[in-house]
Amino acid sequence: MLHVEQKPELTHLSTAFGSSDTSAIIVAAGTSERFNAAHDGDYPDEISAIIAKDIGEDSSFSKILAPLAGSPLLTWSILAADAAPSVAEIIVVVRGEDLAEVKALVSGLPTVVPIVLAQGGTTRQESVRHGLAAVNPLHHFVTVLDGARPLVTSDTIEATIRNLRLRKDLAGMVVGYPSVDTLKVVDSDATVCGTPDRARYWCIQTPQTFRKADLRDAHTLAMSIGLEGTDDASLVENAGKKVGCLDLQRDNIKVTLPIDLVVAEALLNTRLKNEGSHEAKRGL
Image (cartoon, rainbow, N blue to C red; front, side, top):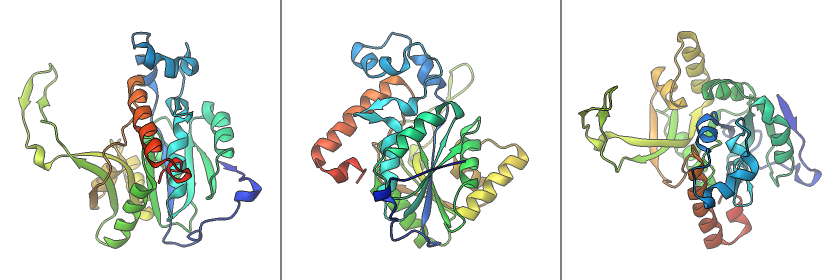
């Protein structure tokens, strides 16, 4: 674990720091395998131009460091988390080969709350578990962000924390939206074998906010039985706890393939142009 020193003029903390009612943010990202494998020269010039300089022939390139609207992709979710009033600490989970570059990146950001770097794991789930171990004991809520979803806003982050505080019956609160697409169940040879009622299905994103004790217990249980969930909410559900959903933000796309960078760049530039303020750049 590596603590990142803040600039002297930014050592003041938000008024929420030190309260058990505040949240720690864990920013974690999955692998870049699909992102790197897809960069094979077949994309149009406008897509390749965004990423070629940084990826080149390096198959180990990390997508969280890809350029997006003038800054590395990871920058935007960190700034959004920093601007959320209830956030008192940010833990950035990174793979070892990215440590030096991410340390330099976060050291130069105009953040207010303290940032801690934690060693990433071999899976997203393991990385979140490492991030949990780095959370300050004073914080009773934990919000997990996917570092590959750069369009999250501070309002969305804050809403998950605020709503979970109010819902004492829930262990977690996640962001998503009801599916607007027709869903098909497809078997192993790509043959359709069912069409479920989409009215009961949601597309789930991050942030996902949990009571820290519930998330920690869910991860411990999952590790003991060898369960690898698709997200943290699935682990909490497996532990017998209830999770709520909020329909808040539909444009927080996940950068999985290089073409996703083009979409994210267009959305982010439009947002910054429309809001045209320093606050907009901090994810408000």
